Image (cartoon, rainbow, N blue to C red; front, side):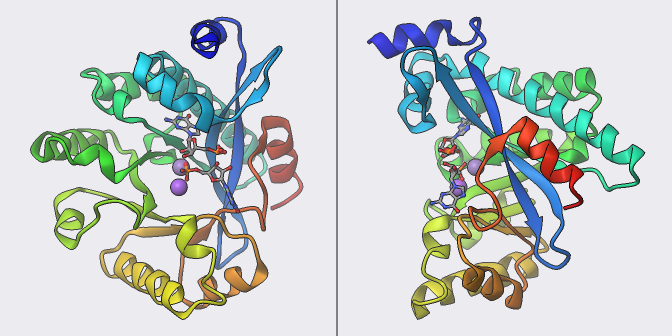
Length: 258
Ligand code: G
Ligand code: G
Ligand code: MN
Ligand code: NA
C-alpha cells in the first residue's frame, strides 16, 4: 500500500529514469540499438526494480502515464543520440520500448505513438515496440488490426521473451511481426545443453525463413556469443556486452566508437 502511494507520486516527482542496454549486431560487433528499461529511484526505498512495481502500475492503471513518459523520454533520447551520430557520420540507432497490456488496450495508443514520433522528430523506423505474446490472446482480430495500424506508422514490432508464451506457427502467420527476441531462458544453456541449443537454432532458422530480425537476450558468455553468431543470429543483448546503463554511460559507450 505504501508502495502504491509512492508510485502515484513518482512521475511528478521525477523519480523515474531510463537505463539503456545496447543491442549489438553480431556480424559487425557494432551497437545498432538499445532497449530502454525503466528504473524507479525512490528517495527512501532506493532503486525499486521493475519486477516490484510494473505489476502494480498495471493493476492501478498508472502504467499508462508512466508508459507514455517512457516512450517520450526514450524517443527524445534516441533522437538526440542520432543527431550526434549523424554529425559523426555514424548510422542511426534504434530504440526498443516495452509496452504493457494496459497500454496496448488504450484506444488512443496509435495516435499517442504518432504524436511522440512527431513531437520528438524520431523517424518511425528507429522505434521498436516490444510486445509479449500474452497481449494477443484476448481478441485476436482486434490485436491484428492494432498491429497493422502500428506498423502503418513505420515502427517495428518485436515479440519479447519469444518462446515462453503461446507462440505457434499460425500465430506468426497471423500477426505482422518484425522481430523475435529469444528469451534468455533458452540462451542460458546453449553452449552446454543440446536441447536448448536445438531450440535456439530452430528459432533463428524460423526467423530467417520468415524474414524476421532475431535478437538473442541474456547473452552472458563468449561461448554463447560464438554459438549465436555461428548460427546466424542477427543481434544480441546481454551482460556479456553490457548491463542496462544510465544514459550518460550509454553515451560514453557509443562515443568511444562501438
Ligand atoms: O532490467 P529489467 O529488470 O529491467 O526489467 C525487468 C522487467 O521489467 C522486464 O520484463 C521488462 O520488460 C520490464 N520493463 C522494464 N522497463 C519497462 C517499461 O518501460 N515498461 C514496461 N511495461 N515494462 C518494462
Ligand atoms: O523481459 P525483458 O526482456 O524486457 O527484460 C529484460 C530483462 O533482462 C531486464 O531485467 C534486464 O536487466 C535483464 N537482462 C539483460 N541482460 C541480461 C543478461 O545477460 N542476463 C540476465 N540474467 N538478465 C539480463
Ligand atoms: Mn524487453
Ligand atoms: Na525478454
